[in-house]
Figure 1: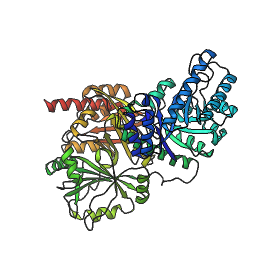
Figure 2: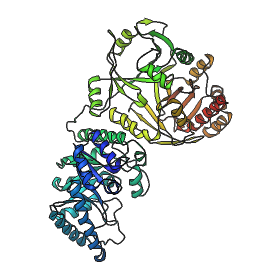
Figure 3: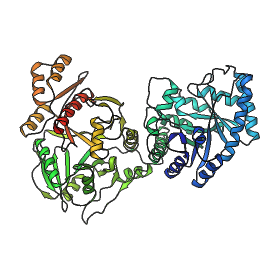
Figure 4: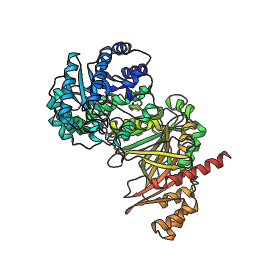
Length: 620
């Protein structure tokens, strides 16, 4: 795949954008006119910089409002285009983007449009240039790529071709099967963008909510596969307008974009039942372990909370100051080593989650996919006799270990041979339900893409949750069977608990861990008897609960005594309770699902308010 990106897609000055694009590994870039107009360098200097960076100038864009204008405006439009050819010569490109006319003066006269495009083709050819015609989703008379193609086809001029933009087609739900009618030699460039489905006008939707492939809701795999079937072998160029990206790092956004194009290429190949350039997405069977970095004093604090939740310290590492805590299928590892990544993590963040291990069926294939997606691998020295478990860089500098599910029992036995206590014979907590990761709002789409491209997971719709000091945005990724679930959370409100966690933690990380059980009341009663510091829920919540769901009064009273929250979706039910946070960093949730697929979003505001109350009390 020949990869390109429009300079409007990344933040910064034009020269800096081009450096970030080249560093990410693209073959080319579209020059967006506004970027050029505001640049201190001339068009000739920008063209020279691109050649120095090894970037092809794939297109100059956009040119607006030409075809179908009345005579009084037509000559001026053609003169403007002629001047753009001069700029293109300096940039080193022969292709300019012509958007379908949006002017209120544009005439709905197809023959006039054909005549204008033919004359434009003659003028472009005389200058050694080509024009790519694109149907804008909000075009006045041409808003569908089928109509744009019909014009290009009927003009039949070598210098006039079609530009396909996924946003303009998929936002209008134009069937991708219609692409099969387009001749590959007349398709001059393909522009790519994803987006969430939003009920709003196409112009504002396009200008603010486009995102990278895999971050939105569009069926891009089927769209790209339809283009590939035509025999098209030209540039695939990202054109992204997004307020989050304008506030982010140009290098990060550029790398994400290339990862997204590779992901789309992979998914399109699979949709077309062709060989993909990379192994399939990883199908994890669940969370194998969660590793905490903690100095000895913090390790004691974690140990008290683990004990209250019913865990036992079952074994010690063969050579390191690392203890394995276990209950059911849950493994919590506390690393108090005086050196290494965990030690560095503890120095920066304090006692916290520094790594997670997921069980995978094929480590080699998983690593190959990560490499193809440019996800960095982490390596550290392995002592003689220790298992080398491959790991990837994850959120906030943490690690994502890839544990071979076929040999994991042998791994635990070899790595932790020093027995301490027996695991609970009748565990109340059974497995990790989900892991909540908190990050800067601007990072959310980046990490959503990371998980969605790497793992066989689905995305849930993004939710807005009311924090006492602002909104928190939350979105989950989850395997189809629910064996692995991550929730991603971010906020623009500086005073929200989400933002305060990032400030105190010095970056993104795991803020809470949810553990599954089959009997929420037994789990809560055991935790209460063992001294778990519960997050206390106020009485008004339970009075409303009884009325809202028509629950028996004795059941509600029992939930109130144990600080259990409740939600229902049809006949499906969700019970949950929370611990207080260890050192104001990591807290735990215990859940019981009775056919319930969500995350108790209806209770999130209750939880956030309860946490805010305790934080204020602690700060007083």
